[in-house]
Figure 1 (cartoon, rainbow, N blue to C red):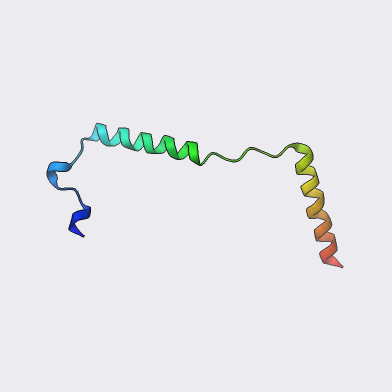
Figure 2 (cartoon, rainbow, N blue to C red):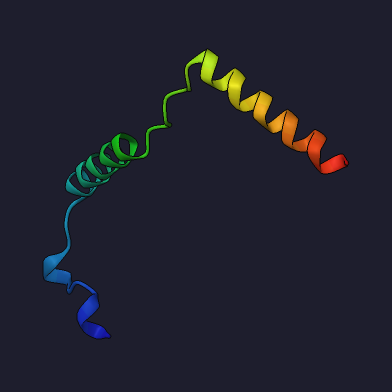
Length: 59
């Protein structure tokens, strides 16, 4: 378990740490971008399908 922690001679300075954090944050933002919205017509069709399914479940 002790091998997982850096020794005092391997510590990085605050500026380097900040740069690494910024780079990781940018990569996460790029990979976790929200999916684009569906085209309006397709969204309307899905809403209609959901409405019909709810109605069918009532009966």
